[in-house]
Amino acid sequence: MRWAKETSTTIQSKLNDETIVLLPIGAVEAHGPHLPLDTDNVLAERLSHKLANRLSNTYVLPTLPFGQVWSLQDFPGSLSISNDVLIPFIVELGESLYAKGIRILGIVNAHLGNAVAIKEAARTLVSRHPDLVTYTFFYPGLRETSAQVRESDPVHASYVHACEIETSIMLYLAEEEVDMSLAIDDYPVIPEEADYTPTPWSTFTETAVLGEATKATREKGEIIVEEAVKRMVRMLQKARAERSR
Image (cartoon, rainbow, N blue to C red; front, top):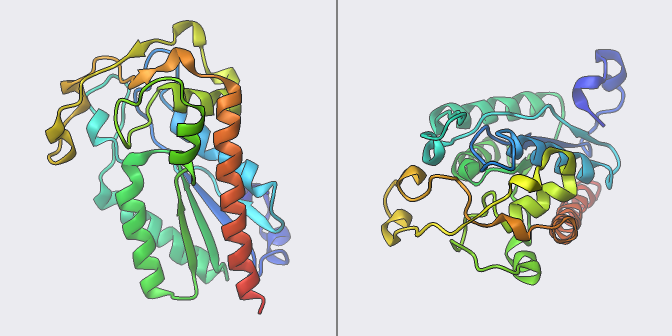
């Protein structure tokens, strides 16, 4: 259910302390020639609604469309906000939900660059309100499912960007947004120090593609997404069950 499509009168009687609220968070950034700038927004929103459809009494908030894109800020079209802005935004939104009686919040993130801010915001919320169960999701099980479906070598141990994996997820959740005729393979050499000092991606890639996007398929994306949804459903149902005891 879409939170923003309710009216003030219809939603009043539907909310209770077992209501689950999902906040999709993405970004606007370069994703190579075959994926749109709002790829992470599309993925976060579609994934959130797929998750909500597997749960009762669950609302999806409007997508937070901007994120921390420092690493890709040099690329045309990329837009970035700082963690100093993102953290209090999430905290204040969480406070507002808490005031409405919400006690289970799932933050569905599709942009790895947001992870630090989201984790810090979640810690702040839980410190202030220990009874507010707050999850920070980024494709649970991704490491295992990626290894299962991958046909190409990963460029980096953690980054999944406009490559075989992310493009496959996009093909499953939003195939109409993908132009596979423009998909490319790019294997930039990421220097070792990039993991230990802030390093703009423009110093090692001109395309923002990290791997073989041409090997992406909808079927691979389905395996990744469905496993992630299964794990998120399990965690959220457990939180709800514990509240009802």
